[in-house]
Image (cartoon, rainbow, N blue to C red):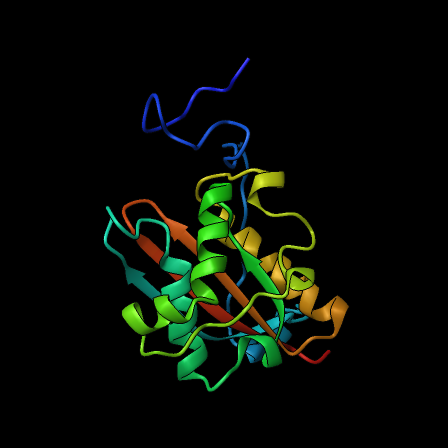
Length: 185
């Protein structure tokens, strides 16, 4: 049979098959100065270079926060998505949400109407969520952000990339993005 819509019934498109499933989970991230990490015997993985939190129109732009925030921090740091970002970890609340962000990021029309006329850029799919995203791994509320940051930090080390872009949407039209820079061990 056909899966029933989770939200706008009976015509909605988000179903259990294309939505991240809620899972049990816990996560912790240790954030401290380089000096403190070394003092405690920890090997740093990445620097948190910049971050952005934004609110979007909860009716028209509910889950587009990753696009707005990514534009904000890339512009502020003089980074170009396709040239400078080697690792991308973006929360996938729903298949439609991640797809709409990928389209918005590379849309000149969206950039002209909603941003400063500069696109975020085209996401290289070979760099996005390569260890599995929320659609595959699940979405433990309160732990997903830490999972994204930890995964991106470890990928920076293993893949020897310089910068990672981490982004997520949140209920109520909120969005987040941050830039991580690999710590040279």
